[in-house]
Length: 265
Image (cartoon, rainbow, N blue to C red; front, side, top):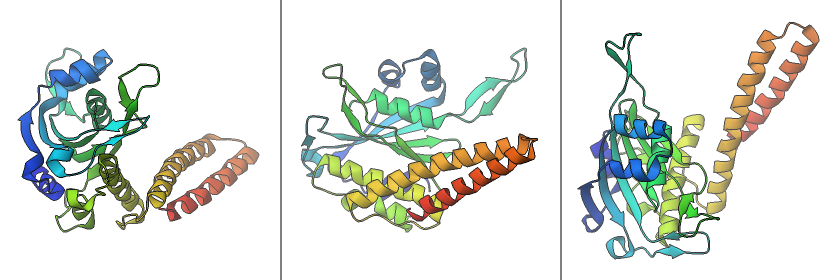
């Protein structure tokens, strides 16, 4: 899927389109807490485009307010990423391209913008989509922080506009009760795509309860996959037969739990 086809799949009406370039210094000033983060943005971000502003008067969806958050607007941003370069050799002569840490870059963009963002990342290694909920900071009045980790997914290069995932991204396919519900709809789409990478089949959930259960099952899968790798490495290094047996039994239990978690997707 190309960037143009992904933007087309979102089916954003002209009433909400902005299509303006955003200076990347705004990301540096508002979203980069460390020198390494500033370098990541300065070295790897080629361009930031503000594609659309979803507000009650542009898409006809009501804003959302409660004690934890207010969603008065949802921004659709596109960040074009260039390859990171690292010196090739001790003398620094020459440079080799390396993959950009797109997961961290997506988080920095989300941190820099005080309202929820549907982020398109066009990187050398592929095209990514990312969302992250926001809430009020608990100890600093007026400050907005991330509410949980961003959900960031790779789109398949051969993904067609007819694929159920591409069709599910359309703005009109999201819940319309409020901007929070609409944004959660996009998050549920990304969760369904993550689940499809495990199950081989893309299916959307029909209720918020089902969507929450799927997110929890995905978290469980990731934790159990890491534990499985850890136990397998320990068993391979272990010299004592009795401890090897214990580790392999523990590995089998983890693998059984992992299979059960995958069945919940």
